[in-house]
Image 1 (cartoon, rainbow, N blue to C red):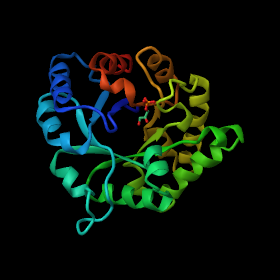
Image 2: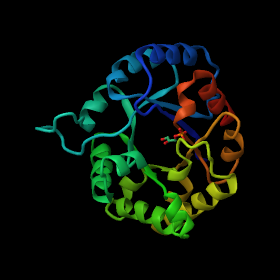
Image 3: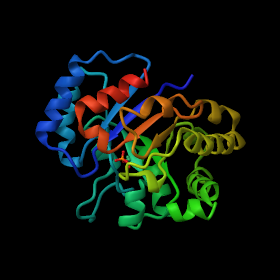
Length: 249
Ligand code: 13P
């Protein structure tokens, strides 16, 4: 059984006040024990979020990392630093990192390795652009992004990765993939995982991201190969995010 994971990626949004508000709401909320929840605020809020979420079942995540252990990398943050703040999950290869900050498959792969070495769980983001979908290249693109990382990983490391399928055209656009569109890609990902090892296909979680909201989460999460959500905009409102978490339980 794969436990659903709902992760809220705040991107470059939020405030200390919002961190406190989430801490309070999740301390009082009755979350089903069958769902895992993770909050992913910007770096400066990690310390406050660690304190605010202590005593709640919500795990802490980070939005990216630099693969180097330390050194002259102004503005960057290492895996070990994230681990010091109790970070459990770290996003890697988010489409915004790929498109705005030039992270290619090699950079993504190095970040996955570095996260794993520090004991963090990388959430490997994959997804096609609208142009690629219209050219019927969705599977080739998504599986190519997956293989660029998984081919280089040892079998025991592959077991420790979470995958997030985020069609780029659905991110922040309000244009969610239909449950059928999402399920088709998730199933393709799972078939590829099965080719690495049947056990991987059974145990690895594949999250969906892209305009997931309180009113469409349940039907997406009901798909057999969708094991949770990576939520952007709707994770900034505590009631909306709680409703999504509850629809996964
Ligand atoms: P939205 O939910 O705002 O579309 O963002 C999705 C996303 O990119 C989460 O990482």
